Image (cartoon, rainbow, N blue to C red; front, side, top):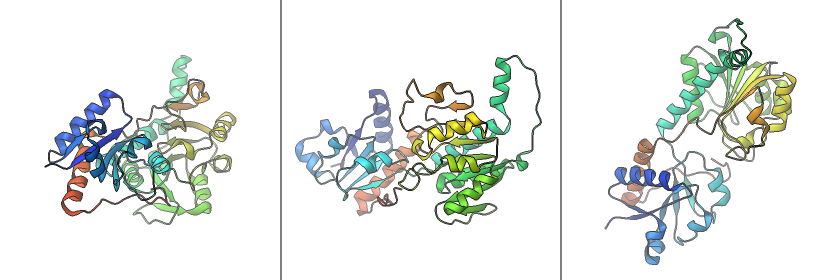
Length: 314
């Protein structure tokens, strides 16, 4: 008999169906199904569930649940809402996700490096004006967060010739990269970087990390890309920095409330590019293969994949 694994989610019907098909194709040895299609005895026997923004009340239906496999790399919401501290959480670690993020970081860094926002404004004004372009080597890009996603992004940026510096909460050593850590290191990076890329997890230590002090410490006319989490940035402080000219532009893909509310000032700010959380979408095929491998290993050996530290938040 195939092990039964519930798929617990808050996805739209069409997206849930697409994921269910991808997971079934990747894991034919497992019986992946909706909780509503399980008997009480089957729910009592569940040890692991696949989750995508699950309703915590739905997970409470599995009294013997030991761990959950998330379909996303980010697990902040699950950490906050998961019933019971004894349930372990495995986030998705997909090499393709890092490749996709590295591509996005390079793309939008080039967007800022090549002054695309300025030329878009000029088009609206029918202004034919050319501006000097520094080389990539003359442009310093600071990457905040040097985990798997951050390191792949650093490599992409270096491969395109940018001068890259990095910051993490604890010291890290990366080939060819000047790295900083701690509060003093964050201030040092801010003073050096022309473009700052945010790839940090949302934790109690990083929420609100980038505020007025950070923006005031940046080079005048610097730019920001946030592909991490919306709560890492103090939004009023960012708006003030943009309005004063201290910062030139911000590319924002993540927000404290998503979708971004209609009345949010970011929508209409002339120096903000709003993206609908598309920097690194999860690839269903590669992600399902990794989920299948993790679950098959667990049912064969009892070994879970690496799980999230609730204290650290990642």
